[in-house]
Image (cartoon, rainbow, N blue to C red; front, side, top):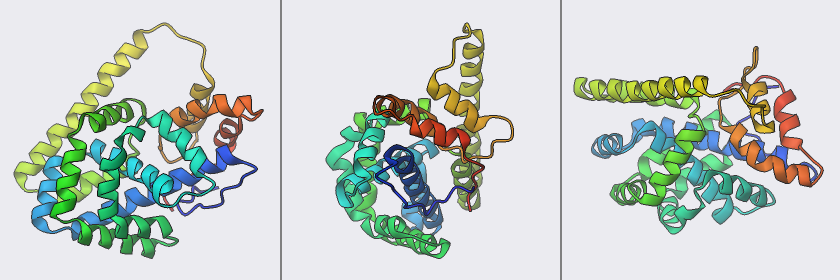
Amino acid sequence: MSFNKFFRDFELSKPIETGLQWFLALVWRLGDSMLLGIPYMAPGLRDRFRERMTVTSAWVLVIALAAWLVTSVYPNPVTSVINLILAGLGIIELGSRLGDIGKNLMTWLSGAYAAKTEADLEQAGRAFGSVFDEAVYTGLELLITSKVFRAAERLIAGRFPIPEWFSARWREIWRRNASAEDASHLREEESRPRERDEERQNREEAKPKEEETPAQKVKAALQGPGAQVPPFPTWPVVGSVLGIAAIAGGGLAASYLATKGKADES
């Protein structure tokens, strides 16, 4: 079974598992269309966007906008599940600042939200590039330099890995547009996460082994031998939801994510 970024089959009888799928699909569409839209930005704004944004900031922004979109603009039966995810991500405090940016980007956001085909995502991407003006950049700069956003960014960067497809395409976009100086800066930026990963791995290996938690078992199932799944940060979200599901007599998210087949970008 392939991961479907156009998934919308939320079921009230299966709120945890289908709600999680629903939200991840929306995040994927927003991230995909934003990357498609960067080349359509005005050159001056695109350069400033690159100077201000990192791949981590962009990923956090996509998650935050997806959450804002479904809770503030298009509330529906899945909203209560997204609120649980919001609590786990620690981005609900972004509030009105996020809303101000979202309103200015509604042509893009609504297009990605409603997209049902790759052509729709391409069109949404073009909209991102065309509506990204000086006002959007100013609002974005204020948002991502705020203490609240930096706290959310650290949380997600530390606990929820950026999908490889997202970071790879981010690098490719800026390689195509970068000058030699920008390319050097990009190589330096890429080396820092690797160094931090190595330090974190060394610390983890030095720790005594502990019994796996349910969320860790989900992660192992997702990343185990032969598992071909999109590297979305599903396991910490599942961890925050598992307790609620268990109280309700469920555990639905864990069983779904542990047993379903491969996922890809198609």
